[in-house]
Figure 1 (cartoon, rainbow, N blue to C red):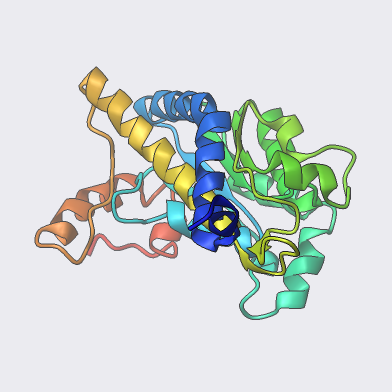
Figure 2: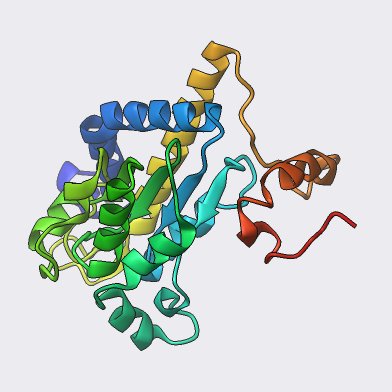
Length: 252
């Protein structure tokens, strides 16, 4: 197979983007892991936000097998696309919604915020990051510099402008990746963002191991002993992360 033909194949172009992400964001991934470790070691909470399809990444970070237990999703029902897709786009563009979400969650140091947004130019993710930073809570932005530069600017600043650490996912403008000459399908943002977060978790695990620290991590409920392992974490965090139980008292 010629190199020209290979470059046209979707799997090879995805792998190229992953390699590009490693090259550009590798050092920042290590910095993000170190910041998260300091937060968790100090009993902080990781507040995670996104809107629209970036909520897929909020789900990826929260109550996930192998994931951190000290994660709280902060979100507004209006940005959830499954019951009203048009509304989710509209609400993400409304001023004030992101700030309100942060005010309700009230993060404080040593907490950390992680905000997912490929373009990083809509008011909702920008306001979440700005409001967290104003409260002294450092922000990790998971975004694409290329997509942000070419996106419609709906705010004076971008998500990256309010971040202590920027993880550039290298998602191309428009997200679609296929066909190569005129991409119109096969969005790649979730693949690249999920890979970025997995790399952060792996780096975090290595740093914690080097320090001799045991991270609070969820175990799959589908393996023997999983429910028992998770019970202690639920007891530890349910008062600070109401989304774990819907605010219900599960002590009985």
